[in-house]
Structures are given as C-alpha cells and as structure tokens.
Length: 455
Image (cartoon, rainbow, N blue to C red; front, side, top):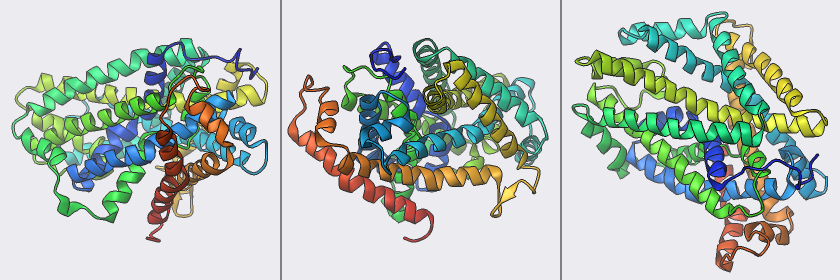
C-alpha cells in the first residue's frame, strides 16, 4: 500500500505548486495577515514578514518536503520511518494530531464564510457597525445555523478528498486557485480606485521604521509560520505525493512567493477601502466579519450594485481560501487512517469528516454555551490556543532538530539534489543546514517564549 511505485502522485509541476500553495493560502492570508499588518505598523511589518518567509518559511518547508518525499507515506509514519522508530516518531504523530484538531475548528470559521455569502446575496449585511456587530454575534451563537454551514463545508471537502490525489486534490486546486486569484484581483482593483485609497496603499508600502520593535519582529515570525501551514502535517503529506523529479528548492520558493503575493494582495484589497471610509487599519480580528461589511457599504454608497457584487465576491474569496486549506488539513488525517488502519481511502475520509464535524459542533456551540469551556476558554479558543500556540511551534522546532541533527546527511543531500540529478552548489546546502540547525530553531523558540510573555 505504501510502496512508492504504487503511491499516488501529483501529475504535473503546476499541480504541485497550486495544490501546495492552496494548502498554504487560506484564512491566514486573507483574514489574519491584514489585521496583523494593521496592528503592527503596515509596511514595517510587511518588510519583516517577507524577511521571515525567506529566513524561516522556505527552510522549514524544505524540511517537510524532504521528510514527506523520502518516506513516501503519511506524516506519522514518515518520521518513524526516517528515525527508524524511537522518540522522534512522536513528532509525526504530533503533526497528524495538530492537523486533525485544526480541521475541526477551522471548518467552523469556514462555515461562517458560506453564511456571509448567503447574507450578502440576501442583502442582510446592510446596516451600520452596531447592526453588523449584533448580526455576527447572533449568528455565531445560534444553536444550529453555524453547524449547518460547517457540515456543508465538510461535505464539499469530503467529495474532493474521496476523489483522490489527482482527480480530487489536484483537479480542485487547478480550478480553485485561479478563481481565487481572479476574485482577489477584481476586489483589489475596485478597492484601489476608491477616493482616498492612496493612503491605504501608502500605509502598506511606505514603512515607518519607528514602528519597529520586538513585537513586530516576533509577530511577523509567527505569521509567516502559520501562513505557510508549517508543522501541521499538510506540507509533509503533500510532499509524499511528489515525484522523484520534483525540484524541492524551486517548489518551496515558488509556493512561498505565491503565498506572500496573496497576502500582499489581501492588504491591497482591505487597506485602501478601509482608509477610504475612515476605518482604522488596526481593527483587529473583527475586520473581516464586522468591519468590512460596513466598509463595502460606505465605500460604494454611490454605486450600491457594485458594492453588492464586491461584498459577495469578497466572501466567495474567503470561502475559496478556506476550502483550499481545509482540503489539505483533511488529507493529513485521511492519509493517516487510510494507511495505518489499512482501509479504503473513502472510509478513512469518512472517519475524518464525521469525527472532525463532531469536534466542530462542540467548538461552534461553545460560543453560546458557557459550560463548553475549559481553563477559562471556550472550546473554540482552547483548540485554537493548543494547536496554534503550543503544537505548531513545538512541532516546527522539533522538525528542525530532526532534519538538522537526526536524519542522516546523505538522505538530506539525496533529496536536496534529487539523488544527484540536480546540480546544487555546495554552499546552498551548507546554508540550508546551518539555517535548519541553528537559525530556524532559535526563531521558533523566540516565537514560543514570546507568546507566553517570557521575552
């Protein structure tokens, strides 16, 4: 079942880039990046973020590429296979567990995107900020509406996963990613043509270096880590479907470029519109579901039909971004159950869909039921905290140590050079190993300690 000669592969380089970029491109780019940028000084944060993608993101992505392609199996078994058992195999299981838990609560937010598409179509988002705030609060605390949309989102994801790697994941990525780019570009153009939009463009691209501080640096490190979907099993699982001819370095650079480009476009989509109507760029996490509906309404007050179309396109864009990421998260656990339990792929997918939907139900209900909480946090916030602030940094840190110090050097060299068929200058490999052994672990450790106020 796990023999590399019979294992499914992506059929083309384009499929590899779009599928893996789809894994990275998600709500972290379209939702989290703009509000993180707004809260951390705009262009200053952007410059540091891009530096962090190069310094941290690309080497860590190559780590997972090497592990996944070399092992040609699911994430849990991949670490065990390269480590020949032992305690390091636990890193792979941590990655699968992280992806599994994120799948459950990520689908809740994904369902919100479908609700807002429906609300935009029906004209339910016409009103002032107080009305939209109340609308959002009533929706997320409703006993069954968020669950209904979450289940619908899982159903779409399940169909894609059951169809397999080439006919499901790759085909969907080739359709969804170009559509996402087209919608994004349309909204960016509309936003940048608004009166006063120049101030938003200046905010994003003209740095104020007085804003630079430790919070900006560490926030950018964390955002690059989350944005690229590192340490949650997605990249490692997708890499197990790479062919032996796939250029891992080139693929990591291309995917990181696409991911960063989408994040920058998201900033160009949001900040010009926000400045045009006088909305503060540091509105925080509420920017997408509370602030922006009012922004669209005000910005296109003279052209209500255009505002209607732009708002609808925006939430369709959010849903597509959420879907590409949820597909990759789902695949992590599907591959695990399919291969470890020796069951058919559709049964593995069904286990993931049903069990994660149950997790999602409890996370959704925790917004309105105080008893669904632990340690002073709702289940939704608890899952977000445990995976995002504990499991992801720990998994990324251990993966760097695993690749840098445990995996035999000849395996790293073989995968880095496609078993000698790809010419790579020796200094490139040395620089990569130095980064993985020293730079990346240090940066991730700083993120981890900063989150708990230690530094």
